[in-house]
Image (cartoon, rainbow, N blue to C red; front, side, top):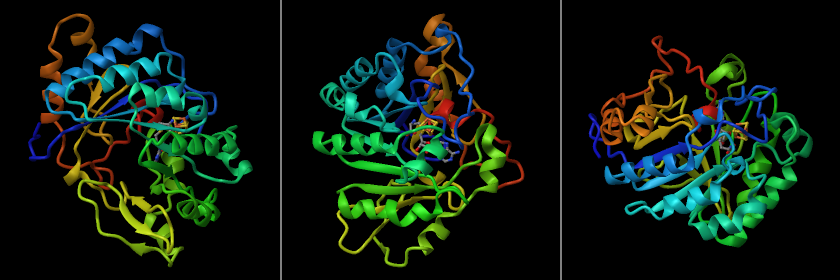
Length: 320
Ligand code: SAM
Ligand code: SF4
């Protein structure tokens, strides 16, 4: 489906929970999120219904995210349900990888094609500090499992935080020499309650790139928000996603659904369209609301302008 700016909207990102087994400093409060009532969260059936209606309108790729999608009860059934929808060609997941060793095989059998795994440090102590308690060994085991199962391509997502994990940049990039995977650096975004903290710890990707002069630029991939480079002799690529310093709104092809049933036309806007009246009360049609979201996608986000109003929800609630 084309939006007002002639962009083809074919990608749906669904946050299936706001809960997580980690508490990354830039994403979640230390105490976790306030528990909400079970009935406020979309059921597995409702999520599949949204994906089905979206597929009728031209969505071809679905990414399941969160919070941490692998702590959501019924996640295997959800992957299966989405992968069986006519028109859906690609089912992907973004995960912190802690539970990938446990669930990888079932996910693959249910129809998951690929995973993005988030990892901000290879140093056990630093990883524990950033995530407030995580064990990096479990993530590395998750990556090995994903490779073994042939989930492809595997992309690692890394956020560099000024004063925290800058020293990890070379080690994280060197993973592309060991494994046939891409390691992508995503700029820290000022979202949610940690938005002021994030601004203070922001390091641009340009700065990250400049620290590793051996990187060789590759041809730009059409439709990808990442700019790719390669280390000499590496099996995988090093990517940079710069939502802050060079936004990719002109190529934005996505819609987002939050765990509590709100459609978000733009990640960096607080505009949300409530799907619950359509799903639960038959008051509106899902088809109409999905079209409304596509038609209200802004030309570009206002992050670097004076008109920007910080999005108050945390990334764990929106889905990254
Ligand atoms: N729990 C899963 C994970 O960590 O991969 C999926 C959800 S998480 C919200 C998705 C991605 O958003 C992660 O790669 C995380 O690093 C990123 N993220 C969260 N808050 C962010 C922020 N303020 N700026 C940049 N990336 C952020
Ligand atoms: Fe959890 Fe992912 Fe947020 Fe970290 S980034 S707290 S793993 S949702």
